[in-house]
Image (tube, rainbow, N blue to C red; front, side, top):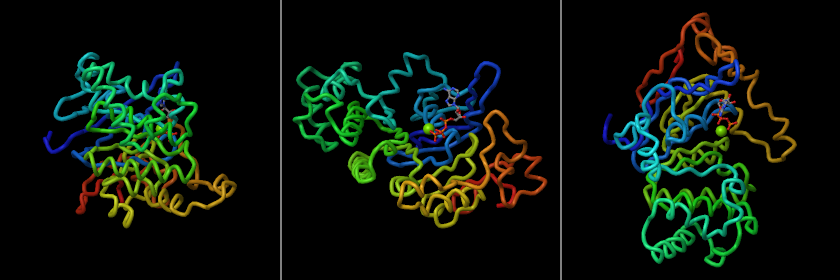
Length: 317
Ligand SMILES: Nc1ncnc2c1ncn2[C@@H]1O[C@H](COP(=O)(O)OP(=O)(O)OP(=O)(O)O)[C@@H](O)[C@H]1O
Ligand SMILES: [Mg+2]
């Protein structure tokens, strides 16, 4: 492992067992995040983005592979050691109204991680809560309000303040925009950009909103049925997607119609993603791939690194 990486996820796999069936949620996925860097994860619903993100920040233990955070393999830590590491890796989820404690005031919600980790004196913690509120653009008068009295965007700001309380190095943002109105999405996105710039925060940014991923990420990983099929620097990947899946995915989402009705009618991709219970042999994408050949049905393509630091798993790239 190179010390240049804050996070080094190597060949991580995760299977969920449900009664008699097993779901292969993530399969041999690898990605690295440098300090101050942001990595976006995109892919259709059920492709394993959240599972990979959760494995990367120690919320889930992978079945295989290593997750090195500043050189420490999280998969080998005891629960107690993991709790100590977890303060460096915080998470913001999609739905602030369920993630926040609705019976505690906004101030108390933000204070909570400081209390749990016994940070500072009572006075210092109080000052810190107001600093955090200011950083995320919340007026101090909301400290005594309850989350349900705030708008969705404001609640998401509370979530972000809470996630920042312990001064983490890595923030996992899992669909943090999708429960918000479009205008509010832009405000939260701007806040996340400021935080990256001002605090040098590293991020794993999971989203269906490709334009948001584009502005926030240095690198984008494209997932399909649990595998990372392509990964590369954002500008290069968008300008020249190499994997056939990345191409159809970007074609389908770049041209998003304005009206809600039209969006509903939008079929994201031709064909259906196969059931995660029945992963196709060979390349996972071959059943929908416009250029699939015999070898794609038989052999799993290994991820290769191309000239521009691009990683692609396809027999024909
Ligand atoms: N706790 C769990 N128990 C059983 N199956 C799970 C669990 N979490 C995820 N899965 C399954 O693993 C697969 C990957 O799920 P995951 O939530 O990681 O996908 P995703 O890309 O985040 O999807 P979305 O875009 O809808 O959030 C799916 O088939 C899902 O049903
Ligand atoms: Mg998800």
